[in-house]
Image (cartoon, rainbow, N blue to C red; front, top):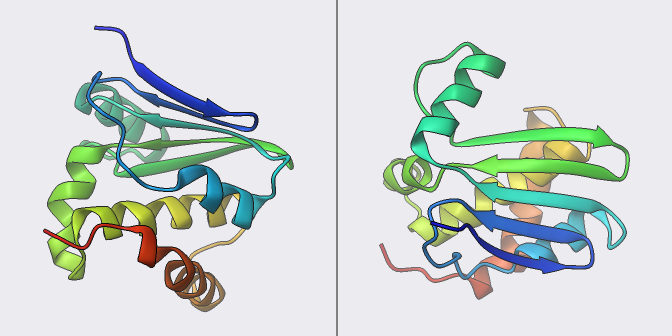
Length: 139
């Protein structure tokens, strides 16, 4: 099965499973956090590949929910595993789409140089407030 892809001039999205892409304003979020000229590749990876990447980069055996790879100040990649994000959403009292949006924001902030902590949490809340109105709220 061929991957489904979508792209704007600086945001390319690939879904390996071939299912529909989630209806989240990824390009708008990316442009707001990283800037319009930032080149971002967003990949929704298969379970097997998400497990392989998590083992390689984090020494963990389960599928990675999200991994962010900054390649330069103006280019990076985010890899997400939708199954992991869907199953963990309720643990955070979020709908699947809210959690997916939150984690994409989280990944973009890592690409911008943020590390886990208070400053990152402030930024996550700020961007969620801005973008949550575009997200489906059903579980």
